[in-house]
Length: 457
Image 1 (cartoon, rainbow, N blue to C red):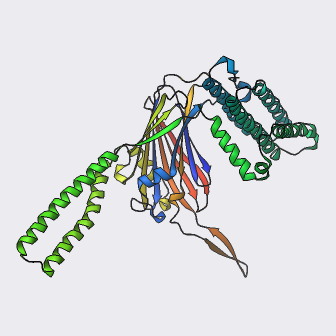
Image 2 (tube, one colour):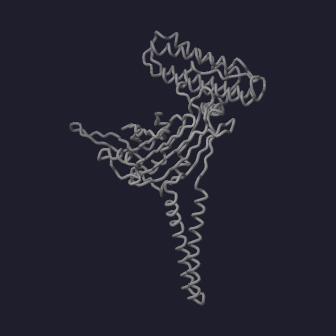
Image 3 (cartoon, rainbow, N blue to C red):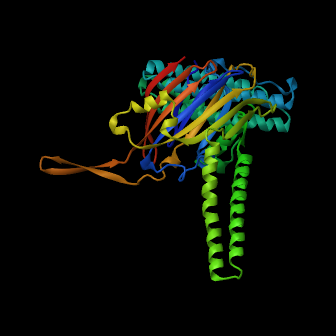
């Protein structure tokens, strides 16, 4: 079955990615076990707050076999198609180069021996030079199209230079391969000079690392147009929520009105007792209205989907996939048997009181076929864990030890552990179940450890 990957994304976020085939349907369930000492619950962090601030969904065309030699030359001249075709083909070509270059650089960095590393690096340099020549073979005369071309050319040139500088900075050291190293450095200098000759970036931008980096991130997003899908998030329960609040308010107001009429009947004149009684009645209304609305609303929306995410192609505006999302706090008795069993396999000292948070995603692919060269799209979910640690204690502790007659102390940091069970179900109802231990402190994730993985047919 399709393999799902959970990895660390940034210092305090995790990324979950899995491929989707044409007309595919997949379900993903995540069960977070958050220790009570974190202070996370429905009153401190609502589901809506966490979803809108810390959960991001991303979908794009994907190929796991994309390497530099396999990048297809989708770059065509203006005469072979419309303006939208030109931009889409240009972006597909540029996007493929970026993904393939990242993949091959990562594979090369795993080679620790010089006799393996440098020949592979030289081969990559020759391949990327050939692809850049294909890109630069045709410069569109139209100003609008030329702007698209310059953005892609500028970004790819900068990305190639950065990738090979990164490769060389981590390369194994050896005086026997100085000529190969100089060849790679010459490629970096050549691309740097190429951007300068074309005046792609101002001197002010080049002098500030933050400005040039942010500009390249913008250009990266521009070349993703037509490849990364646009998304629209819809709240599925907004009208139902309004109806619940209106109904509760109407019932409470009817009850309050009845009490007011009875009070006016019993008190023929305006007295202190009447005013006091009316004040108490209206005070009780304000107290119970919000609490009653919250209780009824949580009961009604339990188990109901919360949001729908619609992914559309940014050029054709055709719907590509639909994602339905759930997010809610649950009790231990609501856990599926296999998930509860995995939580129970923890060591006794790790079985501390915890709040359970359940996330579910049902994804349906509407497209029956993808663009040529792509047999799948990649679905990616990013979870920022920062809201989970905002109530944690700051600072470090001290560990004292006795070394002979001397007392020594060492600084130790406070660490916390989140248990996570992932359940992935594909179209054939096969399930992949895995438990993770996420160890973190207030500043970053220290370790993500996969504990157990099973496949159930």
